[in-house]
Image (cartoon, rainbow, N blue to C red):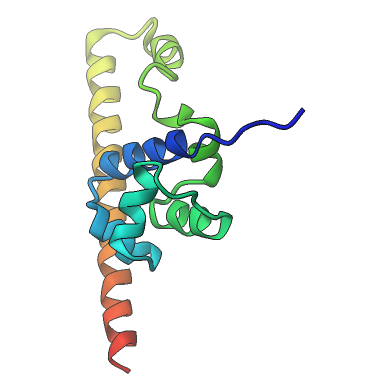
Length: 131
């Protein structure tokens, strides 16, 4: 039995990940090497995204194509709740505060590293375009 591909849903998932990453359509288009209008049409489900384009979009968003095809389990805010509760069980308030501060610092570092990489990639692309 052949499964129907819901390109509208794929587009909505792309938009969701893009906005979670804090990127505009124009920035995603630039990072993926595509036209802004193409990204717009894909996100609205007006164009059927090709596999090649889907992979380029996924790479630009530092995601995998399956996130767009099957959903964003890794962005599900409840996915790790039970694991975090287990980690925190038996901790006193001081230990919980230390774990919270460590997790917050890791999150901030990941965001900063992503932005640094994105800026380096943009600068490299600008240099390459000049030659």
